[in-house]
Image 1 (cartoon, rainbow, N blue to C red):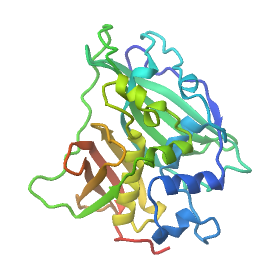
Image 2 (cartoon, one colour):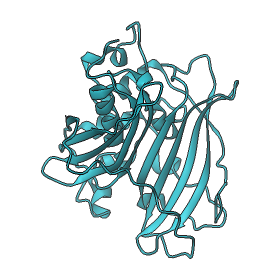
Image 3 (cartoon, rainbow, N blue to C red):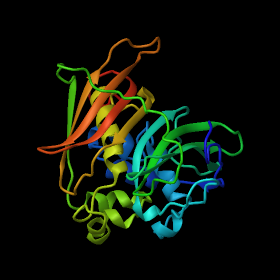
Length: 309
């Protein structure tokens, strides 16, 4: 790592969750009764959906609603401008799963440890802040998951920073039909349910912030599309078994409006490793509209549809 801000460590903070939190999360991203182990706490294989850690940097230890803008006020990064978080959007998220997440943090102490990997000046369009976020058991030091993410500070570039490396791309194979297709119909209220996980950004509930940003009204959380697609991939190919997902990533390409129908197309790339995990690439588009997630890639053990748990 090199360049302004690289290696800067944010203050650590505690995170916690209850069984009801993981139940809510599973409901909000579209898990179905065919996957009762995500929706019913007395199921013998009750489990948190594997991407749940992505919500913890928003939730912290809270059970009550919080002021999103106050919570997300950026800690200044040395050597770079202070960016306005009210004009920032998600860029990309890549999560690595190292240990199964317990369905509740009760009896343990977990914390988030995060640092800056790089801050890149893209000129007039804005700036990219790339970070690493670890979910860690404070007592043992074990890392449960790692997220490499990027945020885009819209219109906040031109400060003379490095342009940054070119990100790798994972395009689907050309001229090949997808191996699986997943369709999810959002409603005008989908974002209002998802935000109860802890991401209370007004952009996804109130039309006014979206109008000011040029979206014409409220838009869906980018991480809702990201998480609901992870559910679709795991349900269609991984038997809805959280142990079958090793990595998952996607890039945010364009906004989703409440009520849009999302269509995920998946392609198996073959060549499973010794444990049976293989690369799957995917894209997500709005029916009749734009692609909303690109660079989609999962490392998954393909076992087929529906849960065998």
